[in-house]
Image (cartoon, rainbow, N blue to C red; front, side):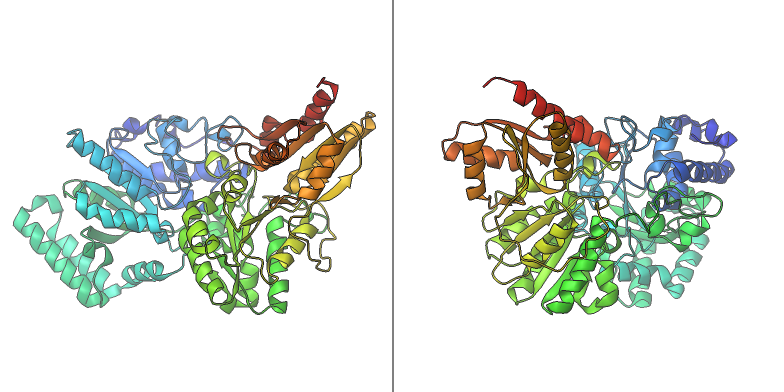
Length: 636
């Protein structure tokens, strides 16, 4: 912790301490919490804007509900920092997202207050509904279950599946819709416009407030009066909003919108809602980045800004952009526009990550050909398939960890029909501080089993551009290109396009004692290890295979005939990955080579620096060096 926290926050070691306070002391707790977050996250980077936006909501929830007996489910989880601080992790918060520290997301193994692990969007309603059903079956009638979901996450199909099922179970669940019109980038789509219409309807909000104030507390009325109020509200919404209420049409009682930064009023509302049975939704209006001016103004940048000056808001970029190579995502964004100018069939698609993936470059240059479909990865893939079957060439850019959510669509809607959808898989490999829920280490294994799918990985930025160019050429079918989070390794990357023969690898360096086969940018670590080995007198060859599927069979035959000892290196899971593909080839062709596979072991990688995660898995320069040295010294 960088600075001493406020007096009240220092006294709160768990929510039971918070509940000892008077209600008029809660604004002071919120002030302390916000100052703590600003102080800490300015020097220990994390998810900033979302955390500031729910300070009052978090305090009100823990003040009203008997946590951890009552269960809170935080959707996505990057909005749960205040929750962590109030639930016994204030003094550990300096380790947030660090190696062997606390996670940046809720984790049941970390705290009994984290009732469900959440790192991906749109899961909270289904999880909370299942939990509420279990609570009911166990006869725990007084136990409450609350899901807190952002308006961006509400665009996900899973959220709608949960909403649709809520009335069937009639579970005593409260869904809190945290509406700030943002996810990471501004929220998009019909649900966002619908919520905005509700929140901005002055006649509806004024009349609703007048009724609320006039009636006083809801629990002061009998069942007949409640039914009358509910009927009146439903009719009022239909007339003043000129359409029926989406949530109430699904059998979920709707309340709101209410001010999400008035902690006293939120507390009163939550207390009232405790006494209303069945599924219900409270629509809360918040401001992402609330309490820090620069974060309120630049909400996308301050979602996770890195280190910043807590007084001026200046982002403290330690790298000089004039001499620092760009990130892989930027190379993708610039290259896509360059290709789209040459090929009018190219379109871009992303599920709610235009700035994170750099598709925003295309959105600015040719907005009619770039589409943000919201947090809806399944829809993004099938939407792309629909365009592809009509002759367009969609580049569907998705983070590796999120692409796995659309696995059925990749198989059923793209691969079976052999459609030319280009999957640009960002954040592939180890991702660093986001930890287990965001590691992009499974895509090689889950894509290489799909017929018709080309699975590729460039070793550098020039290869990324050339693979993108190759993928949009005629008759290429489903085509995946994976690349990592982080900077490329050169400034001179804008080379003329060249077609890469699909299924063709290349030799990086010659050798006689041992061969290292790498796939993707982890080949840069292998390249450095080979240089170290050669400096020690070892003769080591290095091959960049470029494609996991199809494999370069001719090159592999040559390698396996020449070298008895071979190491495969990948920044993906070992089970079913690149090394497994090599072993399958060896077995099928009756080779007897001695193979060592380096990659991600069979456990979930926790948070930390990327270099720490690579070292842990033995796929950094040092790990590859030692594996090669050990293999060369071993006897067959």
